[in-house]
Image (cartoon, rainbow, N blue to C red; front, side, top):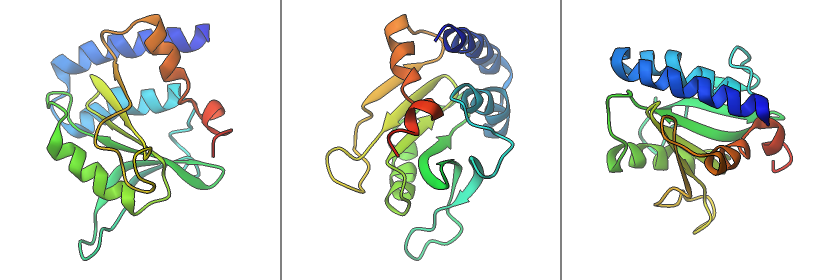
Length: 162
């Protein structure tokens, strides 16, 4: 757990730098989100674990892509939708992730801008993403309890839930 706490503190520093320098979604992904996924224990260079631009077609809308699909044991376990660090998370970004969630087998979704990460599941209705995140994590302002909660989403822990 000590290594995880250290890694989160490093991400906090990265987030502060990214907030000043990352002007695009791609810059946010590179500076913050890929290191975050690595911290959660995923091999960001393996398509068996992290699939960028995962196609999540919704009805007649083709070519819909979620930024990352995270796989555990060959199954999609989490979806990650990334926005630029300069943008606020809200309803528009939520509805995009909501659409992706319903067409995949993932039971966990993360909406993030590299400053915050909002975690969603389907506890209200099966296969339908809840309207409110069950956990919010601020990379720059957090306490030990929140880091401990975040540690539950590491691949090694999540593997037992899939």
